[in-house]
Image 1: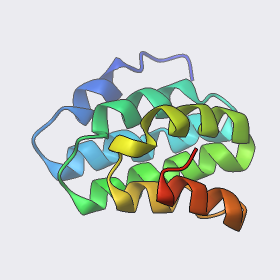
Image 2: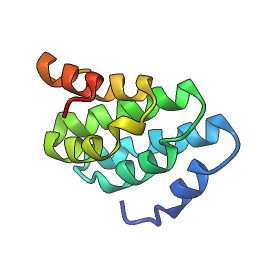
Image 3: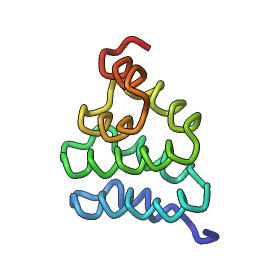
Image 4: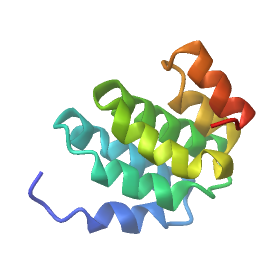
Length: 109
């Protein structure tokens, strides 16, 4: 928790899919500690990623943030859902109530 988190930002910018995926997956430790800013920061970096496996991992971590603090997740999603890859969005909103999920998917927020 006390170590420098900039290494995750560096990994998130690597060419290798696996390095980028490691960057977002490592933030799960912080999510468990109720510290969401590393996940949200890395998610922002990876919004434009081309790889489906990265989309899935980012969506998964955003869902985990939402499981613990729905408002934090929604703040991020409201800002970015229109520019997110569909897979990332679907993973992130998977546990939202059906009406809210539909609003995100239709872009009617």
